[in-house]
Amino acid sequence: MTFQITGLAAETFAHLPSLTEAELAVHNIQKIVADVSPGFPCRVSLQDAAIGETLYLLNHTYHDEATPYRGSHAIFVREGAAEYVPAKGEVPEVLARRLISIRGFNAAHDMVAADVVKGAGLGAAIPSMLASEGVAYLHLHNAKPGCFAARVDPVR
Image (cartoon, rainbow, N blue to C red):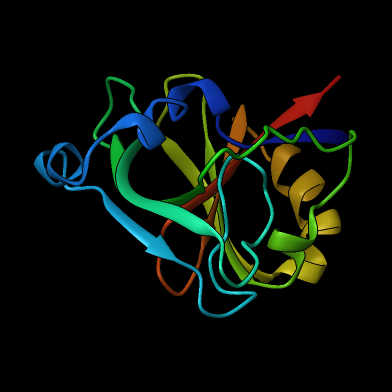
């Protein structure tokens, strides 16, 4: 089974550069500059920020469903990031180089499967989990910090 990995929509974060430091602070958003690379994975471009790039660190509700598994966590978004849509079956390098927690959700948005894999193994692990009984879609998280990385849907 093939799959499609998707990051977050650029339009959701397009307003961030227009906010003042005070406005960012009201929303608990931090403006930072990448000082290492890799190390700051952007959830829109699905790339690590380069040293010197500006990013926003903010809390994002990645699973906004009527379920006990509703979730939010801190994410990084590069300033002016362009949305990247990988090819079907492609695992972007930003995921392939990390330890990834895969969480499988059913049609009712409840978690029904989970695993942790080295990112280099995602190409095999994703189709396997999508083929599991009751799994409708997946969420990928960076396993160590626990933050949301991307969504995965089956392509039928």
